[in-house]
Length: 323
Image (tube, rainbow, N blue to C red):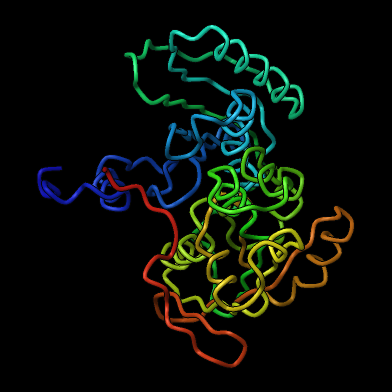
């Protein structure tokens, strides 16, 4: 890793350096949401996400909601692979705060019950006073054929489930930066991984991932992994009534929604021939699916608003950079 010295202070650069180590086929070149290990004809899907106080959650967020979010963001990665969850391993920073720890455990119990997921084990470490809480979770699932980020083909359409921007808008409300409906705060604190949808979509799609860091940055990652270009139409991005009531639905609002992150919706590439099946799935499950763009030969991300070309914003989404 010496060749990367001095150039690994961003998330993307650090992951690029790690790719020299992650050479097992299960790692999928670190281009995916999860590792996929083939065992006896089945696919064991493994993912690990961390959440950190001040980055992914606020110190004022209820501990039970933080437990929910920790589990949900990991299960969202399993959903993107069409996997059924089996269990989780917890990494917990133990602070000298009995009430907080007890509330977290109560929330974790409710969350595991809601998703019917087992706690297999994990680890705890003591935190120094004043240290930001850092929590980690490994989720394990089982899939029949898990789509990667890298499978999009020229001519595929780009689709997204649900609505976007709600989680980011809810964070602004929780920070008291703006006033808005409680439903958006719930979307930020208690995201809903699309597990059933992911399992239903897996046989029909060429590529799939979840939207965690922002629609634009994540769509760009799918295009890069697939060796293609992708164009997104801002005019058709799905926004909720709650989001529109708070921030509107003009171009600025749609760009805001597309770069916020914390959506945990599914983003996927599928050929036009599958559109009828996809819309039938959406109707059966009661989860809207919206066609928002197309893949083509080339590289990079392009935006339009209807027929008008739109320049890329300076920030496409969230990327971890040391402060």
